Length: 246
Ligand SMILES: [Mg+2]
Image 1 (cartoon, rainbow, N blue to C red):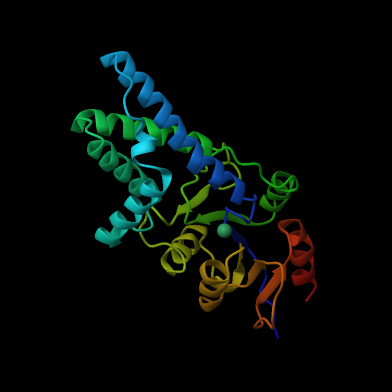
Image 2 (cartoon, rainbow, N blue to C red):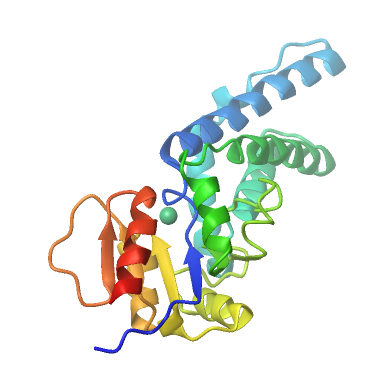
């Protein structure tokens, strides 16, 4: 087999470059509790009467249901999680009897808090030095379905090309975010390694386009040629060295 020299690497972000599980739990509960407390204080201050708390009337589960209902009504926005959250919050706040204007205002504040917490991520300790070293040799891009903003992390220098597939409304496994990255990288699929943790959203769609894949997973059961399993992102340089030697 003739090996093609790699020219570029595309990276998934969540659960590839950092462990996102704790981040989402903290962010989900944290911004809702913040909104509940800040709103109670504002209402009590403006009316003098302690209100029925927002989160008592609409517990976190009601917020999650409202997002699902919105996603069903607006299938074209189902992957735009920021939009879904803000609209679900505004709709619950209107049901909580806030006037339209106040509901929109508080939903916006809740989302500001959400995005602050959402970007409080801790990349695996090896990642930054690794990206700096890789950038000397490869063109790098990020492709995420999530709502992490590379600029907000201060990571534009690592990923001058950052594809936010959720906001494009064509999330992975749709091939379009991968094609957008390839077009901006100006590389062919076979010259571009995709690194990600999801079989459905990273490994399969990239492999189907002809991209080699580093799939981060705890176990594999017989992978097709072209998909290489890593148990952690820290093993990537070793894989690249091995691909080089072929
Ligand atoms: Mg991921």
